[in-house]
Amino acid sequence: MKGLYIKRGGAFYPFDDETYDKFRKIKEGKAVELQFTQKRNIEFHRKYFALLNTAWAYLSEEQEKVYGSIEGFRKTLQIAAGYYEPVLDFQEGRFVKSPASIAFDKMSEEEFAELYEKAKDVLFTYVLTNVTLEEFLSNLNEF
Image (cartoon, one colour):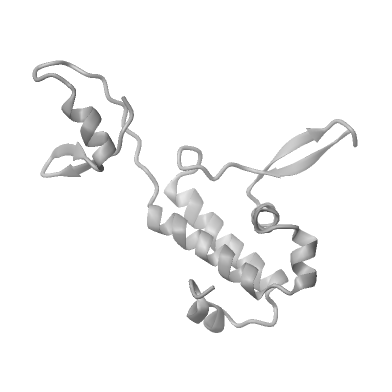
């Protein structure tokens, strides 16, 4: 039984309705085994995608064509920020860089914060060279 829980007063409680529904089906006095992992901050995850969406809105049509899609842009930015894994391209006979997973269960909060900062550095060093950080941040989430 997977679910999200929140700790309050030294005890864990279901975090959302879906987890609560599963939780209440457990009979009183029954033993269950739980495995705990601390989840990343969903708001910070949303902030990262707001960064990407806002950056995408600043791109010219020519730049958009280069990346192909916002997903292609995200992957390129992530690789440039150093978050990739080598994958063998059989046709080329060499290893290429593939973006590493940023899924909640694959990357810690600390790693994700580092990715965010490095992605921001890449954006303002190589992509959005004509935009100030202040201007960009004032427009964050506007697009």
